[in-house]
Amino acid sequence: MSAAYRRVPAPALEAFAAGIFRFHGLPPLDAETVAHALVLADLRGVDSHGVLRIGVYVERLKQGLINPTPKLRALKEGPGAVLLDGDNGMGPVVATAAMRVALERARATGMGAVAVRRGNHYGMAAAYPLMALAEDCIGLTLTNGPALVAPWGGTRRFFGTNPLAIAVPAGREHPVVLDMATTVVARGKIIKAAKEKQPIPEGWALDRAGRSTTDAATALAGTPIPLGGYKGYGLMLAIEILSGVLAGAAVGPAVGELYDNPRRPQDVGHLFAAMRLEAFGDPEEFKARMDAMIQAIREGPRAGGTERIYLPGEIEFETEARLRREGVPIGPALWEELTALGREAGVPFPGGA
Image (cartoon, rainbow, N blue to C red):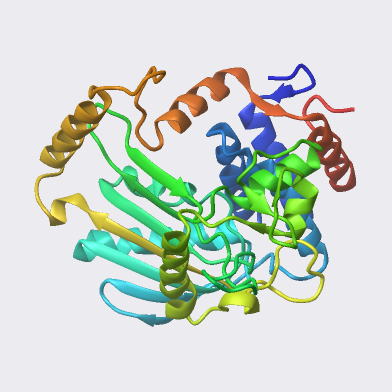
């Protein structure tokens, strides 16, 4: 890592972020919820969805485009399913509350699902399925987003990067945690590269004319490339249905942009689900089977040049353990931005001027 990066202890970074959100009107517990979600992303190496996002969240709070004190309410509910109105609240606040409802339903019925309308960008998707692991549940979330990607064969942007995340408990092994966009790369990684004035790899994005580009700023004006061609398009469509259409949220180009959007809320749609292991059998037997599968995958023959076979989430768990010891790396451009945001809110940035 470049020497230009400086490290901040995670608890100090989380306290700093929470202080900024309190200054901009969030109740203390909600401010802590947002701060925790962002710093957790940084700890797990998903820095495209970490404290990098504080600036745009603050800007939208200042413009009145996010409700700092939402009143979440159930529009429809049954034993295992709930439709929730997020009241345009901060994404991580609404998402955390929705996942808790899904887990409550799972405790009562074995499975719980919550669809959310009038949500906002909720950061790292894995943050919410991870909540299910402590309750011996499989957790899932899907979400739509601002239109960035054209349908297969089309030219008009319609779909977001439409990520999905699933967390599955194991025994002695790390849980399996899949968190992925349905584009080749999450747009946040392109945003991070543009902020740091770094190029992006070939194959991540196209420019406005549909040509491959390695310039991050040009890519932001263009479009990310769908994962797996027409199969990625199909997966985007399925997630759009299960998050936006099912919840009665905005769909396609009707979803408000997160950046450069001073006019309207996002009205993002989400889906959260929890499946209780004991509803399907003995949880410990399930975890033992997961361990056996993980070990069989890891111990299989390796392709040339491959030192280790990883399971989804394994790198992130190891990164989190390391960065909790070493501190979260912050690049110079983000360091300056966070310092300025802290100065405005009367919250000194840890280690900053």
